Amino acid sequence: MKRFLLFLRFSIIILAAASCKSVLMKMEHVKAPALESKSSVLAFLKRYQLDKKSIYTCRDSASCVQLYLKFKNIPEAAFFNSRGEMLIYSDSSCPGKAANFASQFVPGESYRVNHGFCLKDLGEKMAPLGKDTWQPAAKYDLTVVIFWAVYCGKINRNGFEIMDVLNNKPGIKVQVLLLNMDFLKEWGMRKKLPVSMDV
Image (cartoon, rainbow, N blue to C red; front, side, top):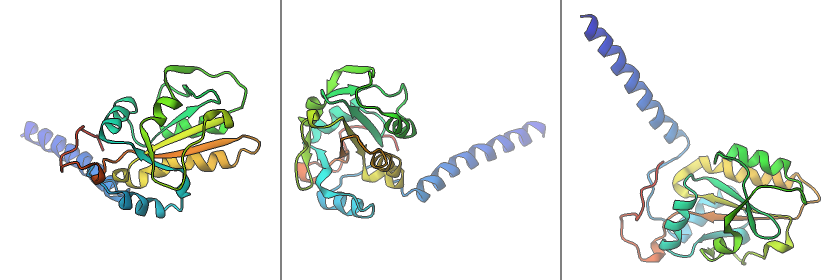
């Protein structure tokens, strides 16, 4: 009887933990990754009243897969200095740490650099969805690329909040690019996504 009660308690705890995740995902409008269209991406961003001129998608499905392998957590942010070098801001990909780095960024300071990936590499994998194209990093003290996806729902706010942090830093020339990481119907893809994406 004791074993049965212990098993029952354990089962209830496991069931409660599993249902909490699904409840939280519904509250944050997180859904299973699916093919999106350019219009559904723009409709999603309209809710956040974001400037259309800084919105990008991956150039194609191969570029999207390569970026998913490089930046495994969405939403995510990448920072590039005026030489186009990717700055290492943390050993974690937590958007909270990215916002903290953005708030403490000082032009001209020395930061650790990831020499294996630069803004030019990223630019070759992006296509504008908005009105214009990105500018060379040399024109800015900091270029920030915020990776986001429709399937992440309200969790994308964590990445978008970095823009608010940077807007409150006068005297720094910043370029912010919003890179959508959804796989698009316009690429001629079938229903199955080419990579497994954790939600």
